[in-house]
Image (cartoon, rainbow, N blue to C red; front, top):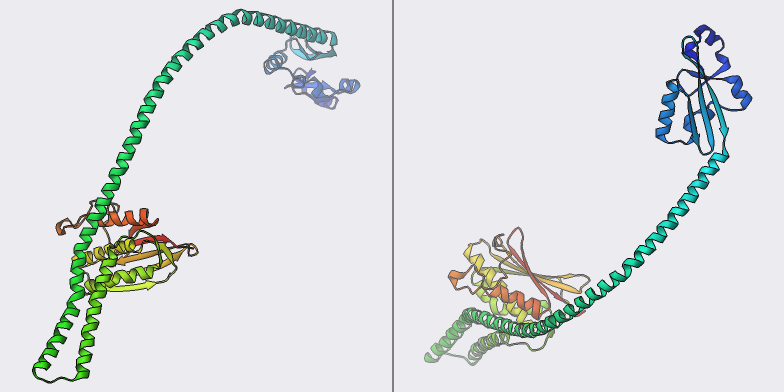
Length: 421
């Protein structure tokens, strides 16, 4: 490994073809030697020996510093001997010796294996001796500890079992009592709601009967006047009497509608939403239209369902009366109540939608309107039970859902029920 820095540059350049650049800065290999030995420059590079990074750094530092060094790795010994100029003491070259030494390698390997085996055996022996000495003591202590612990646990379990039994008995009684109270309270609320609706019904009956009664009165007065004048004809009398009979039948039919409305349904009936709505409108339509409120019907789904029609009628009536109140309170021009039906999910469910154009429900109370005793009509003797009982009837009695939202015109109530399909 020749140091080119100590040779005259002209001389070196003239003989440069005889050398091969090495991995070490400023040093070149003699080409003839490498060719003779059938080696390459990389054969003498420290990086090729698989030595550790720390040893490698030391070796490079020694070579660059002109010191002798020997490296051993995996049975191979590489020795770098520095050749110095006796006068200038400069490093002229390095003489590199590489040879295999299997004896050292085998010795080291055998020594390592023997040492490892003996160490492992000694560790195993000491470990078992130590474990045996401790195991018995540990077992005895553990048995005592577990026995005491189990005894305490059994006592605690017995106490807890007795407490749990008593708590379950008390809880069962409390649950039954609370269920009984809730049912009684719901029944009271339902009765209270029905009584409030009865008051509204009496007002509706008055509206329903006023026109027929006036017609009967006028017709009878006309007949009486003709009798006084002794100016009557049999056909005319018969026609007028038929009118009185028709008016009387209308009054009787009205009574039947109101009586049917408050009749409790013990069994579900097969009907349609259109029939339920029409039956409800027979009761409330006159009262609403007398307030100049227009009712629009738009039925798009007429599938049959099995439900309690009278209870659904109560819900529809309550929603319509609430819409009537808010339309009058807000003095809406062209007040309108729209009732429509739609089918959903391949006719397995359908919905009845009742909406008004009164401006909608304020956002700060829309989530409270189904709460018991919540009312915006306290000054008008509102009970706050109408919508609460309506939601209860639809959800618990009819297995449906009652919800509310706002659109651009007003409040939208949606009653969802399942069809018999």
